[in-house]
Image 1 (cartoon, rainbow, N blue to C red):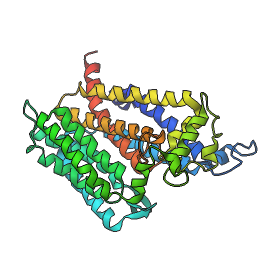
Image 2 (image 1 turned 135 degrees about the horizontal axis):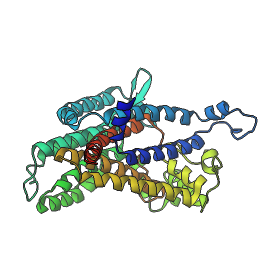
Image 3 (image 1 turned 135 degrees about the vertical axis):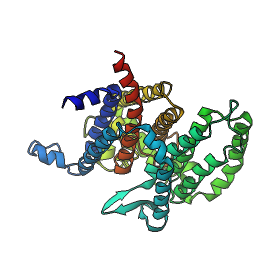
Image 4 (image 1 turned 90 degrees about the vertical axis):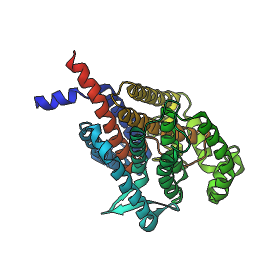
Length: 384
């Protein structure tokens, strides 16, 4: 027992506490969001019946449990292992995306999942982190010159990013596809690119946007167009945003109370256990509860970014930067989506939204980060 405790002492306990707090916030929220019995607050119900009244909550507890076990295991897997397998992991995830293209399960008009022995898995969630590892591998193997990468030197990283981007966009899952491009792109900018490359990239995006607009599905175009004026289609493409804004606004300062949210409990708020879980939080816990979770996330993300500059190698710094940016981008897009700043693109709130693929892959990635911070913590303990 003593060796186990000694090993656990090497971990970044502050980071683990932050992850646990976010998971607890997610579990509490999902219990309310997933209630299916109208008499869930009845004094006649036993504790077991109350517990089972929210199947989403019960299932998510399982995902949290599996995810935390994987996170702690991967916290002791050396970063050299990820450096060795990064190309193979990327290839495996790309193969899974190809399988989705041919054999994927269709839900809500999108083909994003594989059905494996009764378990529905979304390969694009793991692909987000595989692209981060692969980009870090390429940068570590071919570091930029002091002035940064040239356009020619960026051809390989761009190809690595573009292939999964196209497959995921075809599902269609535009939100995840954009994240697949944004995060590794931020990693390349972080290590340095030539000014000409940045200028060229901006001009290229401006030229591609009209072409990309024509490639969007009609429902995606409507979501973008109704962003500025959701009242123009209150029962169609503007419905999600309007109901989310009503839920958030009605929470006011202290909220309506746990399990008392009318928008979620009466099923007015769509996808309230996944994409719009933050709306449930704001309705039931008000501004105070929403601010607490945002502040908790701010501390969490800031702590992770600080670790980037304490790492021992370029590869470790890049994977911590990439994973942190991945979580931050998901958080920012989801938050902007539920308050009406961004179109509804189906990006889950990290560690709060229900979903096995997203939860387990996020905790797995945080296990990789814990390994990097463990080495830093171990060094501090050695010289304490």
